[in-house]
Image (cartoon, rainbow, N blue to C red; front, top):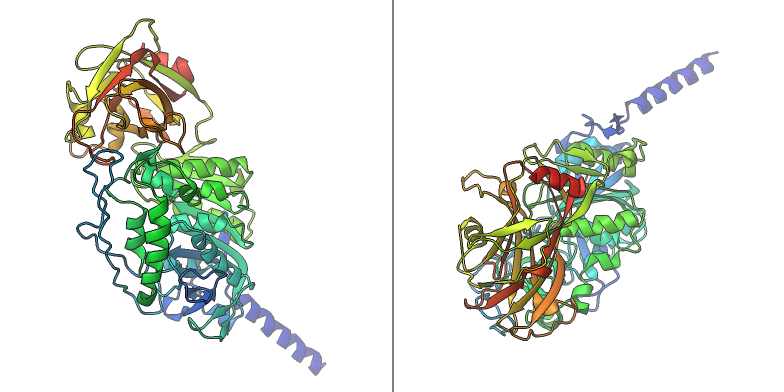
Length: 605
């Protein structure tokens, strides 16, 4: 009897001990903050190097990526295994200064060769083992391990930065393979002492913003096992679409004269002794021979840095986030990838807000996404709305749910242009038989903002709708078909959709003035990959898209189509004087309007 009592007591002790062990807790489909995990002073931190299957710095050894791990102490004291939130970046060790001459000169004619840029050096910071503390306070208390790594050729990671090259996909793949026990990690950059991720469940999610949001997509395109879900925020999904637009050399907003080699210099914070080899091999050979600032054509170099071309193996659940007024990494980057992911049957949601660069989804959305795909909790997130859009005057924390994006109720409506006064012409459903031509001249000294506000100008054409009597909802891709002749063999073409009258108040939101924008090189009117010089005076027809948008144009406003040439914030800036002549009869735009043509008629009648 005494033996039975002792066994019973031992069982009770073991049961109570098991009950006291820390474990993730879920409520309403979300991982909750657990006080047992919310102990920063007790978190275990260590760093290591994961070996890849490539050598890009030419030293004859496989490149190793520097990895930092932060995890709850219970992963050691209680043998707890947890899923991983993984963030990788080229920025963690610092970036090059924006020195004079580090950006390309843009004050020249299209197709003209100019002097190369000055290449600054990065002084690496953060020689301590810890790479970054981002995301740690957000996810560890909710029952995750957080892992960071520096991308190739940055920080303490070996290799060369390639800005979209294959090694930037294979590097995070190697880290995920290590987290799943398939490749080796080491305690030192060149040593042989192995580190094992015994605390990982083998379920990994990735997130990050901008370049840090590009790399989760890069990893996902490898199809690596264990990468279950990604949340890219404002990711650059194609370096061609970042630095070019429909054949035109176009800078990202705020960085006039930046190109892919500028970004290479900006992030190259790795081993100083490897930089000469990396510069010669990547920047001064591969990039110099492939980037082509002369024609702006889409070629093999750019195709290899376009993740849309690499999506076939991808299977990670995708929650994409972007701002409709992000004129740095423009919203087409997220649109094109999420569209293809849906077509592939990958679980996909998209979150759009009305602001600029960056801006993650609300924590609730991210929490539900990772809870479902990393912890395996059946919270029904796959049945949630496929699109979440922050309306113009709402907080980013309170998006409106929609069945999908573009709005399924949006249908294409063709609007034609008609000549009007010296100030502006008409934009309407009517396509009169006799129209004629209108001409404007290029002058980059006038900004797009000033042109849109001008009552009349020789440097732009403006066509406006009737005043809206009701709100009008645009959702999706607008496009333009334009027939135009140039007085020179090459010319910039910029097209804006604006909301008028222009709100000149300093506190005006961008959505009150800009609807969407587009840029193109008429030399690429028949092919994105092969441009042909224009014959001066000859008319060419070209169709291309504006940036995707979802915006409600308020009643009392007018929709304006503005056509001009050089855009002082984005394009090359040739000498003034090039003339463009528009064939009015064969120039039109197509707007994706919720409710279609009937909604437009109702709004303007």
